Image 1 (cartoon, rainbow, N blue to C red):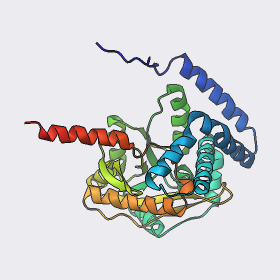
Image 2 (image 1 turned 120 degrees about the vertical axis):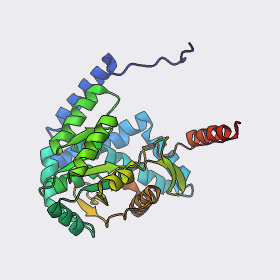
Image 3 (image 1 turned 90 degrees about the vertical axis):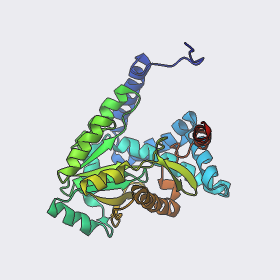
Image 4 (image 1 turned 90 degrees about the horizontal axis):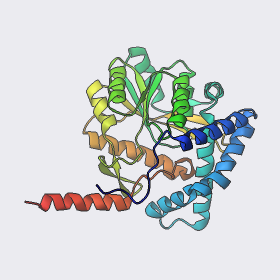
Length: 312
């Protein structure tokens, strides 16, 4: 049997364990600092050191060039700096749940969808809050939890099992229930929604099995599972965004009007349009480090599918 020339590392080995210990130590030290100092420090560390070291700055630039090739160098530099700063802040925020909940209670919650969500809570109508990696979805979730809402979530496990353990625990600490991505987690989420529950789902991650929907002018495979679950359970689909203030500390949780039920692909096209509008308004708040488009892989898959349809 052929083997890869590049040796693959098993997850859960000593490298992952030591990486986790180092990370826990850095988190412990950061949490000893006042919150604003901590956010500024970690944001700056990711922006100036970690991001360039692991190539996130190059990925941001590549994605910007893919969808907005006419962006000036000055704008690219500004967006890249904002994105990496936001990544660092979002990371360390998750490790101080009480502070994030307290902050959520202080800042504004609004938007045309909020009265509909409030009515849904009174009536026991299920709600799927749909968003992308924009600003801080977790801050927006905390704002609602601080106001007495029980909002679950579906999370994607990290490859490092030791990282994953405390990441998942933090999500549980914000609010139950939390489900890990996979068949079992999806079934648990559906059961929660059917019972009148509420949950957050983010859809802006590449999925090779997704439907190609234009995102910022370029096709991006997009899952329709959110729409499928909503149609199956009768849940409202409410786009929401945790939008950071210019000081990078405060934020507003904005809830938009629900997406009408209909064809699942059209529902996700509308969800995509809502996210696009936010990104165009303030591109530095979206997490451009994700491989959202993977144009080379998409082209390869397209060729394979075309070849398969030509076979007798």
